Length: 78
Ligand SMILES: [Zn+2]
Image (cartoon, rainbow, N blue to C red; front, side, top):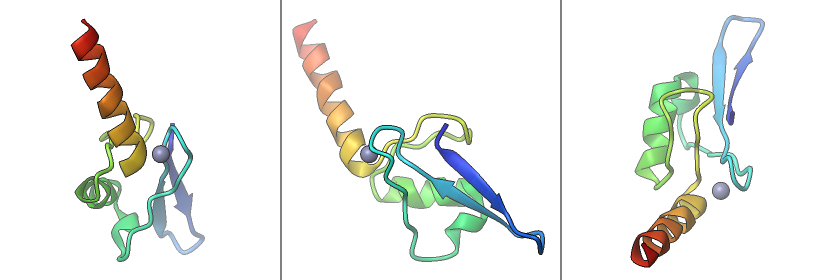
């Protein structure tokens, strides 16, 4: 639920990627926000967990690391 699109009156579409957990927005240093797959790839390169779907689950670097720790804890407890 964290992907958002902005449509400008000139027809340009921009995408915004937000973390589902902390609400942080991914900031890309280039024009990746013109394409959702490119934006996801750029975010994943920085450690984000993204979904190919705009409505999928997305986590920033910090939250993805935290949830990875939780999965490890759960795996060790099982
Ligand atoms: Zn986050």
